[in-house]
Image (tube, rainbow, N blue to C red; front, top):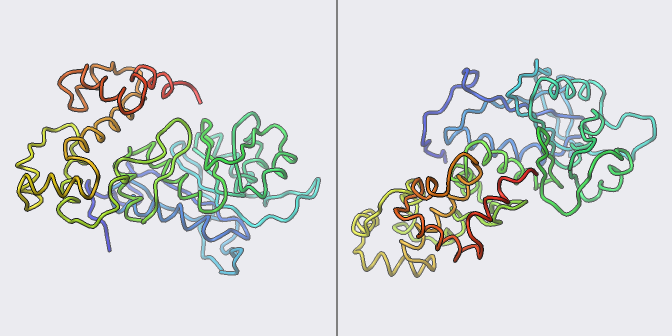
Length: 335
């Protein structure tokens, strides 16, 4: 099943395409590699401009599970807009004075960081960033079983426990194995917004989990645990155009139902009326726009489809228990 793109798909190698470089280390864990690769591949099919490149210091490596992987490309010349993903390898117990990660990869990661690339590790891949000396003074995380070893080997790193992932400037790290999918979705959301990210998560049949001050559940997925095709069509329409007016008659026609029948079915399957669902979508959009300090709350309210900024403030207060001005302070505070 191939998702239908909502914007034209970029051709790999096109000037507008962002390169996602996977650094494969000996003993790489397959899920650490496959999860994030699948996220960016599905995003590409939905129209995101990504070119996936799988690289190593040698033409072939063997995964921790015994699967040979190759032929692999050599490490490319780093670019400032590269996204570098380091899936976690199986690590032996650290020995003082002995490299934990192969030196060729460490040297290249330093060069990529110096070139301005964004580096992201999955699970024990964080050790590669530590060996490259890129974690001093930075928040980071790794597999729970490697936390203490990481703290001992990289005392300058601020190793976090019990988090899915961390973002600290040009460095992103994730916890154990499957959390690499959460990290990849978070990186995708930062670049392309919540709607595309929710579409990718929905296609992959995964729940969109988040860390930090963001809401843990995505409104784009939260009310989708039903099988009613007409309600799904209406949700798609409202999700893609949250700020537009949506007369009930037009939505009912889209669902091939009467207005009364749609309202009843929508309430039964989501717990909300179509209007209340649209309000949730608009508040989600507002949360994204509030990260831009150049937009006033009045402008944000208008862009989200609220004719009256006071209506927006009342709905936000009722939904979050605090005024939007307070939430904006949290969203724009340095992390």
